[in-house]
Image 1 (tube, protein in one colour):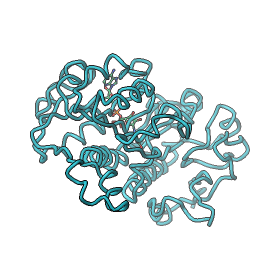
Image 2 (spheres, rainbow, N blue to C red):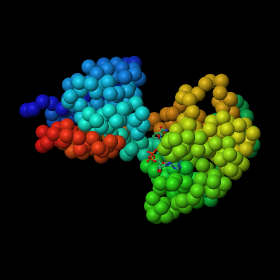
Image 3 (cartoon, protein in one colour):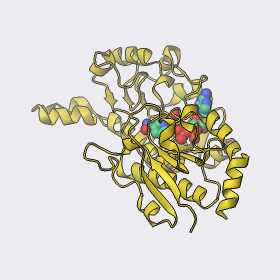
Image 4 (cartoon, rainbow, N blue to C red):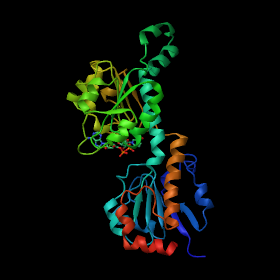
Length: 344
Ligand SMILES: NC(=O)c1ccc[n+]([C@@H]2O[C@H](COP(=O)([O-])OP(=O)(O)OC[C@H]3O[C@@H](n4cnc5c(N)ncnc54)[C@H](O)[C@@H]3O)[C@@H](O)[C@H]2O)c1
């Protein structure tokens, strides 16, 4: 038998009791794989994984610690950094590509859970779940007629961004009887037509939607895409849901619009600064529903992300290309190619 394929998990997967804080992330597949061994790296908090810690590993399964050019120094065996999730700002991708290390993410793991979360927030804020919960707890049962909700049927849903998650929101919402619009300059027009989604420009979407759901990527182009001017184009009865990234929405402008009731309400899983300042006036408003960038944290997300990341590990261990590389150029790096040959 040759050398085992060694996988290092960042230690932040463990909670204070020393168990995987996410529950089942599908590690059984690593236990069952022949010739694969795994253990935890030394604690790096959310800081940089030090170079010595990675020597001797073929693959890393990474949550929050940073993988930098320094981390890769002397990591001669390393071929894969599998990120648990779809964000990878904690990984120096250019340094990985140069070193022949493939970086993967788990879009198939987040797709369903984040789309379900967008729908959860949309329905919860429009049905006034927070307010109705408070009515029961504070003995105001009979005030319920003052808190009528808004149902989805016959309303217009506007998706700002129609990618992995946006398309899944479309699929989930299809039975709810909503007209669907999307604003995404890069979306596949034929796929949108086939899904019954009208691709429109952002201003049209904002003017016509009863529910605006932000599911686009955060890029220099989408930073403050929803600013004061754009928010002012929304209907006074409309709701805004953001499960994408905080800085896509100008949070001060949104707070002002909510305070003036220029729009009906908002549901936010993400913020411009996370966590937000406890004194932020947004937090005092009664027409917002908030979550700590964790509305999608469910058993389904944990297992989905884990399975996807572990599939990448097992693919690379077997000399196959993983399904979701962010730097496919690394697959052609001579070091990665020689490792693939050795696996066959
Ligand atoms: N809340 C969470 O826990 C959570 C979890 C996973 C992902 N996310 C976020 O959700 C968002 C969507 O993720 P995804 O997996 O669907 O990504 P994706 O890359 O598949 O889709 C993003 C879409 O944004 C579109 N886009 C880019 N520029 C745009 C613009 N100017 N206007 C409109 N659309 C534009 C792209 O064309 C693409 O279709 C991302 O911001 C991601 O970071 C949040």
